[in-house]
Image (cartoon, rainbow, N blue to C red):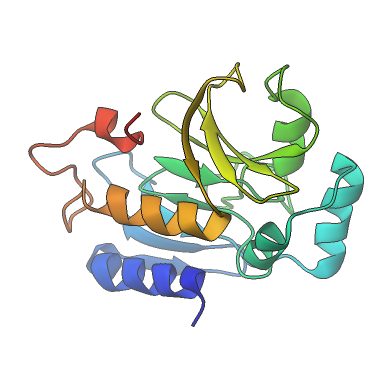
Length: 196
């Protein structure tokens, strides 16, 4: 079982009592009415085909790192704890219909919300809601960094790989929440960012 399949399985086990919704467009885990009437804790989107990945590469004029390709072969983006962390994907339809949830676009984010000083060898792959910081990957070394929303030189954390980032942060952030999807008594949204 891959690390993403294992993560998905753990989230389903822990939060299935809050509800599951699986359609051709998404897998939603754990209703979160305390966050909004249609809110969910976690969401995964169906994998991308090799052709869809190639279309991303053409649009961004870069090659996707192997770890990102592996990720896209399992899921086309996901959100974790109602967007504490959001990993980008490629929307297949553009709609404001909340029942047709789609990932945030990796193409649009890298073209229109890119820090001006972010080198071309880096790809934005996600972000943290708390401060809108960007999760970026070095397309050559596959090292992952957390940088400021507007300043790529403001590095606040790093991980040796995409897998290491996802596993480390999933474990750390899961420990901030109880089994009903609420912050534990001694935790808050300020704790969702990695320590400096």
